[in-house]
View (tube, rainbow, N blue to C red):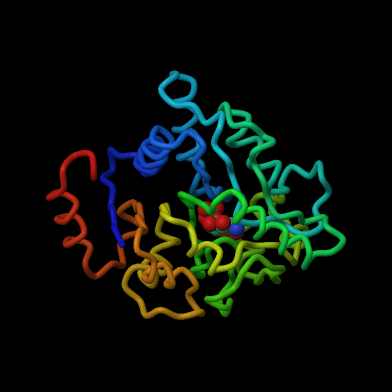
Length: 260
Ligand SMILES: N[C@@H]1[C@@H](O)[C@H](O)[C@@H](COP(=O)(O)O)O[C@@H]1O
């Protein structure tokens, strides 16, 4: 696990966008795993700047979203497909027909989840998965207690997650759906590379478990310790509970500039 603790002058989103741009320059048809929430917004804004400047094209990139609420109407602004369309697709040259997400309105949910897994496989798997992390250590919507071997399926959201996400629903926790479809932990772990961004003090405990805790379904993100190619990009607040913070800073300082 590569842990990058950024300085006040740095934008964690830019560091993640650098990795994505390098991948897309190598492979213009790369498959990206797309996360929602606040954490990836700085990545998406940076990618949009590069596309606007003409230094990057995402036109042939394929995207697979991490998760989706169950039951939100197709035109609901907080339906994750609409969020991704607004925050990423509309701001770049991504082709919306190449972006896929789990179908939260499917009548046959298990069949929709299986079809989603097949679609990821048919695309050749995810090259780079963008991740945030919940304050309870969830990734995607894999809440504490999720099987570390899970695949795309329906999950019940915890009260904590619904409260955290109520800010997107005018502060009304009851407006946040109770169920979601999410890529499973094993689905996420199958990505060839994973880039996780976390900022702010509220994430410090989850980041502590992610980087230095014991692997446990109670802190689902800890499974990432088993993945061979994970980069965790933090600000100093989210890194504030890391025992080895100085070591991570020194390790980074010793790398060539393009790797930092
Ligand atoms: N399903 C999403 C996750 O993909 C996200 O990583 C996490 C943290 O969100 P944020 O980045 O807004 O803190 O919670 C949400 O519920």
